[in-house]
Amino acid sequence: MQTSRRKTLLLLTSAIALAAVAAACSPGDPFRSTGSYPIDVFQEMHYNQTQKSQEPPRFLPPEGSYPVEGGYISVDEMENVAELSNPMEGDPLAMQRGALLFKQNCSVCHGLAAGGDGYVGDLLSKYGVNRPPAFGDAAGVSVIRDTGTTEVTPGEAFDSISGGKGFMPAFEPLLTEEDRWALVTLIDATVAQRQAALQSVNGVPEEERTLRLLELRGQL
Image 1 (spheres, one colour):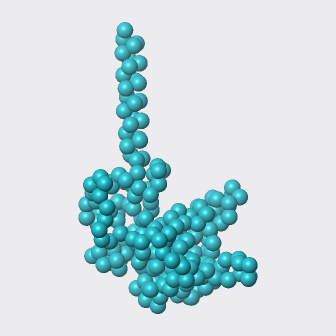
Image 2: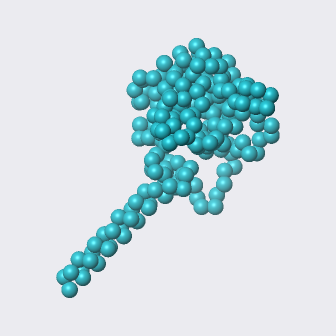
Image 3: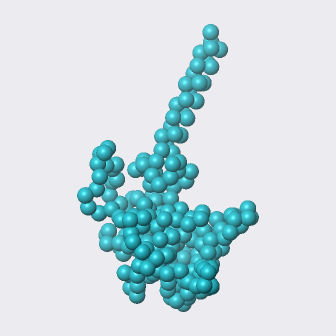
């Protein structure tokens, strides 16, 4: 009888533990998840406690509700995305914003200096996966076309960042439209401008970077 009770207690404890893990991994949990993936194996780099502490409380919207303002227009709903011009081009604050966003969201794959040599890029290359593109030593990212090798247009870069490409996830539901254009501003900058912007944020404590990004977003 005592052995049977122990088995029952063990099964009950295991079931509770599994339920807790499933709840922690469920998408949409405002306390740990962005809801962007079916299961959050790890949290998005930009969605950390340091940044969350500077934000107001987050609550899920009522079931069945829909936004009447704000939000974003999906790239799938935009016409001629590749032909879009960067509305933030030439804005020095956009360059700073792009560098902060790059450090927080992109450097782990593309490298601190945007050379395609980030930790994840190195890891993927060991398994025969192409490295993330490098744009730290050239003006923009190049792509092979039927007419030859040319740079991607600002609209193409925005489209790739928004909708994802290859192993890169879609950042459309994670970053605002202005944030994504700020990243395009960084990509399309001259080598000297890009390197200076990236060097200015590398080595800066995360708390300072988070506060500066929120300030540039107009959230402080």
